[in-house]
Amino acid sequence: MISGDFPGEAERYIERSYNDKTVALWTSGAAGDQNPLYLRANLKIERVRVQAVQDTEHVDLGTAIMRAMFSGNPEADKIPVDPVALEQSLGLVRSMGQITAEETLRVMSHIHVLKTEVKIEGEQQEVTCPARKRLDTGREGAPGKYEDSPDPVHIKIGALRIGDIALGSANAELYNMIGQQVKAGSKFHDTIMVTLTNGMANSGYVPTDDAFGRYTFQVLGSALKPGCAEAGIVSGVDGLIERMN
Image (cartoon, rainbow, N blue to C red; front, side, top):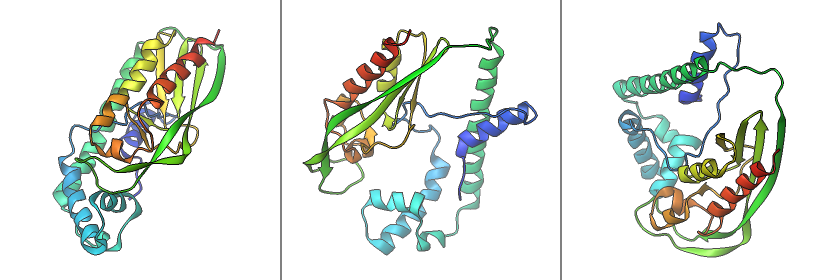
C-alpha cells in the first residue's frame, strides 16, 4: 500500500473544507524521537509481517522491520492481515488526520491580519561533522560497535523568512529538542523548524548529544558521533536567521 498516511488525510480534509479550491501543504518538524501515542493496531499487523521476514531471510530485527514495512517481502505479503486490526489502523490514520486538520483550521480562523506584500529572503549553508560506521547489527537495547568513518556527515541547513515568520530547515530527521533550541534562539517570535527538506543528508537520525547514551534505534543507526551536529545545527540556523533584516 502506498499512502499519504495521516498528513494526506489532513491535507484532503482541509482542501474539502474549502471546496477543493485551495492546496494544503505539509511539512515535517523536528520529530526524529517522536512516535504516535496509539500504535496497538499498527503493531499487531506489523508483528506477523516482521516474523515472516525473519523466518525466511534470517536477518536481525531491525532489517526485518525495514523490509516488512518498506521494501516488501513476498512471504510477508502472503500473510492474511487481521481485518479488525486493519480497520482500526486505517481508522486511526483518518482520526489523526482529521484532528490535525481541525487544529489547522482553528488556528487559521484566528489570523486577522492578512498582507499581500511581504519580504522574502533565504540562505543555506552546510554543517559538517565527524562520522562513524556501525560494525554490528541490532535494533535497540544494547550498545553498538563502531569505527571512525573517513567520510564526514554533511547536513544542509537553511533559513527562509516570509514576512515576520522564519522557517529553519535541515535535510535530516532532527530530535525534537534540537528544533526547540532553534526556536528559543531565534529573533523571530514565530519560528518553525522544517526537516527532511532539500535532499537527504547522509546522517540518518540526528539525536541530541545526551541521547547517545540511550540505545534506541535512532541513536544506534545514526552515522553521527556526539558533540557536533546538535550545536552546529542550532547555532547555524539561528545565525542564518540573525542575518536577516
